[in-house]
Figure (cartoon, rainbow, N blue to C red):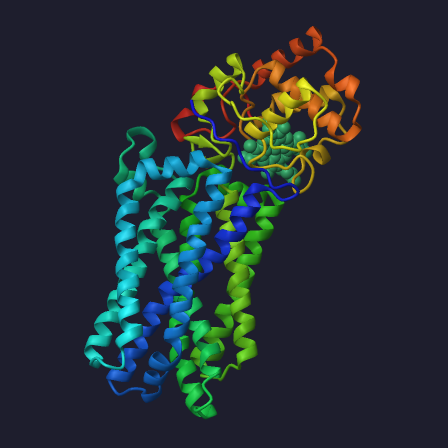
Length: 473
Ligand code: HEC
């Protein structure tokens, strides 16, 4: 059993670090996908004589944006790998091990995207319209295929479906949320491209207001599929595990808030786009279009937060907890302790009082740090501030019952007592108390509570509910 320590970023949670990079990346990458489709559409408008200005748009303006977005998308994509391996090397390892052929295929499409995009960028003035169109279609197709492939892996994390029993790659890939998520993201991609196009049209100095309005109304066609969002969102929610759905729909106030932000922002964009731009054929100025794009960023951020958050306590549902521990390792770790395979010292400068608090800090890093800070965002010392030692011992021993989106505690009584000592010490700085020998009675209590909690998570795979004797809170 290898262990890779979580990199702690106090006062920020590691999850937030990934989220910041991921939201920016998803936004850029989805824009690049929609941008490809928009270029094809406008190239077609130009080639069929429907809009002369569409040519100016494709060849003069938009290509820059697509170039920037796919370079920035690629860089932030690497950024996701870079942050996520520091936070959960196991999750990334699991994703790569299970889906290496899919990643490899994705990489080929990415190369095709770069090739087609660059060829168009470089040679569009020298080649025929038909050749331009071929390159743009190739670019758009390759970009969408990247989305198609990565979508299978990302949605598998939340709903691994039949993969859990058979480890069949196909069942994992075409999992229960694959299709709603793919269609939803495709529509988001079109929406982002349509909104950016509205901003870009506003910057085209050589066009008069009427010519701009016409182009904007064409761009608004890309926003029309938004009418399907409620259906796809509902489909996605239905395909989600019931407990995740419960949290999103109200069980977790934070997640519910983010969901509502996402829905509210989408409604505002969709309403404006459909009624104003599509039905009434109005003009939209650069400032309003930028505002709508910012709303779209908010919707993306809210949506990604909900998707990530609703996976808890797992990073790969039913198979690996967010802290990289597999459900079937918990019983063993209860016996042997959670640090026997963890050779890593604490980061230089970590404050501790001695041996016991050092152990406590390591237990924290191994089991809690991926979702909590010691002190800061979701800081455990703040969350437990009003608890006495026994409350801490009991609530941490029964972690999966304290909050169902936490995994069961995966260590022995000494691990847990060290963690409690460390957290207490962190607030009170009483070295003597923190490093005093452990008491048999306290350890016995912890063992009793650990036994009561059991090693099963609060959210079990479908068919395994009956297997557990523990009542869920
Ligand atoms: C999968 C992510 C995850 C892991 C791993 C995790 N927690 Fe939590 N924990 C949470 C979330 C989310 C909350 C809710 C915070 C809130 O309600 O604001 C929470 C809440 C808590 C609370 C407050 C409970 C209450 O009743 O108010 C405590 C204490 C806590 N966690 C301790 C721990 C400790 C100790 C560990 C490690 C042994 C741990 N957690 C591991 C996600 C996690």
